[in-house]
Length: 392
Image (cartoon, one colour):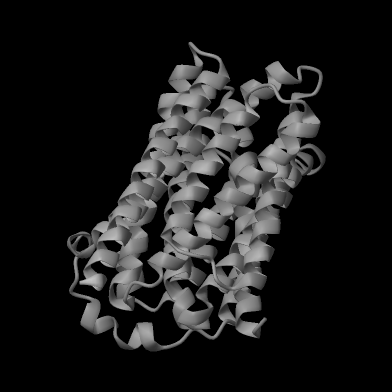
């Protein structure tokens, strides 16, 4: 692995660890400060909404300005905000932190994904994406596992300080990553483009991929929000252990698939993206049918594997866009994906007040399967038309 890619993967993994750590710890902190599930939900909604709104703006900034300084500043801003909250904890500052974290993480992600082809080269972007997903999956596993333990052992303030340190370490690693100067050199030529100008330049194929990824996010929201309730019903003696087993199996599936894709190099085409997305939904629905643990673990492992495969293909395809448009495409893609996830969180939370977890997860992921099948049908049809035209 080239040193620049190793540093980039390390920075992404550490930054992701901080994100997953504060995702749990700050939600618990909000509940600790207010005692109100409603205000805790508002904190999560602000964070998600900030990422949604800032996606297109992040794309515009990553097109106009050098990307490495943007990512470093985003990490430093997140760290400073966490340190301020640790020094003077209040609900007002926590809400402000939710907005800041949502915005800077959107900016960081857009700048990272749009920079990969320039950092490693277009022919190596699939391998780089696989390594980045592998690092993120390991960070998710450690972040979710460590959050509850650290809060219990050290308290909220120590966790906030630890979280801030992860962002500062990520920023320090990024400083050492040699980003090409091409993005900065052509910034003036691209700077006049408005944040929304890229929408008119999206091809139908890219629009279809982004739409399917948004449907995927909608379905994923259902099992994320249904898991705590399902864990309580399926394993009342130790729901936390059940939920930890579930998320661990998913993360391991993602890790193994990421490593496999790294060795393979070629991630396949758009048909694989559609098929993997559909399979992911089928596996997640199966996971909520009351399977015994010995069968649940491989099913959730397979769901994580399919999800990771789809993500790597999707990211690699979007990175094939010309650099002048790439960051803008990723910005709008992030906004659409956050919108799908937010809609799924709100809608599925309301449905879970009335229905059991299985029908809610089934309906949400049925939407994903229908959209994936429609996407696959359109891809197959276009392939046949090209074959006919070539024969003529």
